[in-house]
Image 1 (spheres, rainbow, N blue to C red):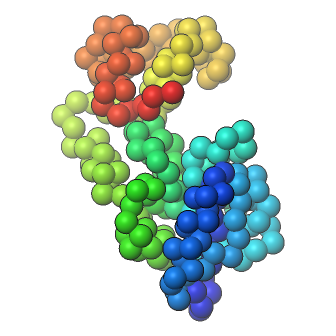
Image 2 (image 1 turned 45 degrees about the vertical axis):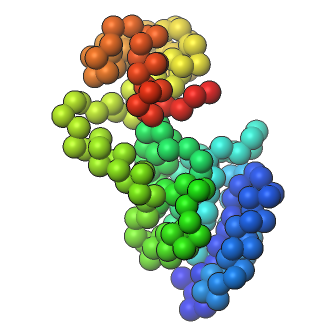
Length: 212
């Protein structure tokens, strides 16, 4: 990290969002936006040439490389800058995917400016920065008396919500149909439901997956 202002890379496919974030950081003396990218691939290209202290990363970016894949790729680099996710989504599926990909923190776009700037500073120090409701969801998973769904089970739920059959699930995930059925049994048991439709409905109600 440099001795001057924190150098931030903004990664978001909406120019208006990037413009608003840049304006917010421009008002501060301790932070500056040194580069912008419209998707994960552009972000990787920027990091090849620019010195960055924190990457502020959206998750969904149109047809370009998404934030989870970009975060994973960045995290695998030597001397990788911390990645702070900034998104509108707070489902278990999105949060777990980002954390498992290596994100240092997870904030929501409706966060107050001061809270977001504090999160950027914390991420630059290597500290975990979580939006309050995101932290509450993660703590809820840890404290829940019911068995928590695994990342793989949440992934399968998301694919179920897209209407994939067992055969299509097995092809998508490179596992056998028998393994898919075993996962479904565990999912139904953990959610306390008896079929796919009820599992999808319950997962949506609980915020485990987000509507498509």
